[in-house]
Length: 254
Image (cartoon, rainbow, N blue to C red; front, side, top):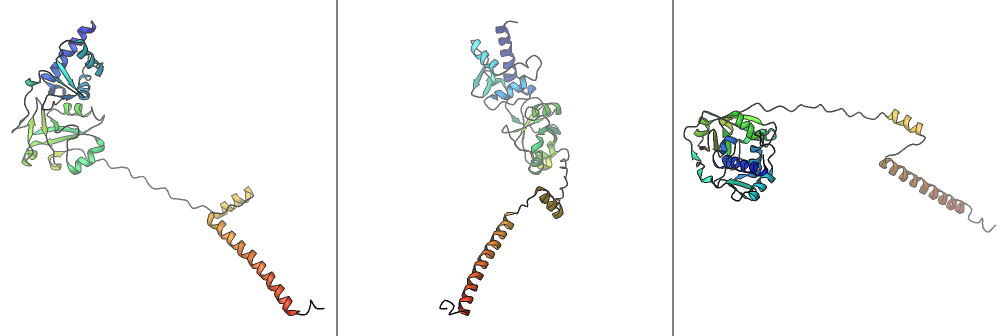
């Protein structure tokens, strides 16, 4: 296939993904129809035949085609026909169960505080568990699967919005509105007992080495005692001289 034909085919496919049914690929455009380029590429490269697509492919499409069906705004991309996308309307009768996945490292906080939006203004809940896992694996390789009970959620006053076939949006999911696996317990590693050094062994090692090493405190104490000893000897010598002179006062006259 010629290069230009391949680019035209990719342009039509991009228009289909972004402008007609993004929910089929787990994408949720914002109110202006934009999707992050990174998320768009993650969704496209999951499909056989488009795994080679990169950001350069989008730039090439915009340069080669005189009227490309998509447009880029900094880090976002959308279809020029985004007006065909349905509005996100509140859903009064959602499915009884929805699915969402979270990262393992944030699961403990989720159990304590509930599910909160991270990458999007809303939490993307899926009717199909496989789609929920696919979306989550774009951010973490081993996500934790959670099941949302929509009746309990709506009793809490949380509004679910329908954003395409099988996808729903929620501002938050309180703690008692979902179920998930038990939090794995961290293995307790026993602390190693600190073995005190044997004074006999230390003495043997120092004797074999031919020298003894002192700690800073012992060395300071040793120097202090040596200084006191030297001073005491000099004082005793002076005292003896004075006593001798006093005992023989006229020794110099003789």
